[in-house]
Length: 343
Image (tube, rainbow, N blue to C red; front, side, top):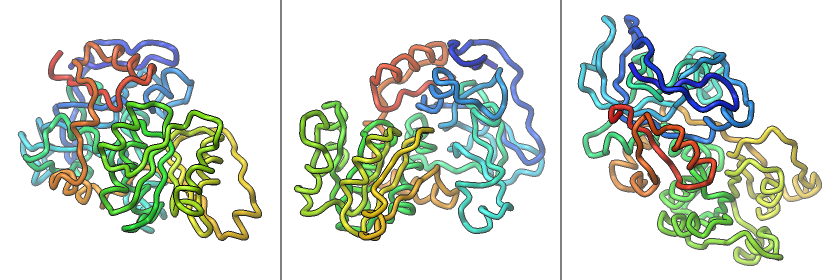
């Protein structure tokens, strides 16, 4: 099969022929319809973030496709079944899984990190993790559910605990933040979207933001938000991964409110401990999504409460994947996807 192979940091992905994965008795082989290009992929390529499986490795963790073959012990997934693959596979047996926090599974396996991913024509995964896709959802578009939608869904619904009528600020309207905007709007929140790019703010408005704030100017965004909301938002989401924007987001939250950090950063940040204590504020992190939530997300997409097509900026064959990574480096587009079946 054809695959785009990661040989190490600082190198373009290499297109080559590799062996098609073998299917175990409880696995399925999926013909990849589409795979999203994510900032996580750039972390490995450009920023020396290590992968758990040493290169050479096939990246790609946002996957939709069609079952090509199933192991002898697999039921209910015949060839031709339309499927979505979660970005992270969980064990179901560790202490965190038993607590219902499978998204922080102690033995998690991430596609395109711990094992080969989906920048390829085929991928093999355990059948227990595969999700059926209804016919109403376009197969290629569905790939972004696996991370770009599911990660902010978990952040908004479970970690941010956003309720109808809550005032919510989202800092950063990239691939994850823009979907925090539309998920929060879908659950009935009043959403304030913050970014420095006008086109991203326009998309945020299109996907449900009540107000947009262009974060370029002399006045701190936190001050603007406190004025607009008479004291601060109920929940703020930081979807950039920069210490300075994490602090801005914290300072935009009202007494008794909550900051949820979705953006990745390995750097420390400082917040006022007295404000945290006296105002009974919360600071929480959010990672991935629980398996039980995927059917709920798929249903929201099926009913049109969450949109996919506006998120996808470029669709390209596998041979153009390095061009897609360059688009992401330049900040062009929300989600670019590769279509391995198109060459």
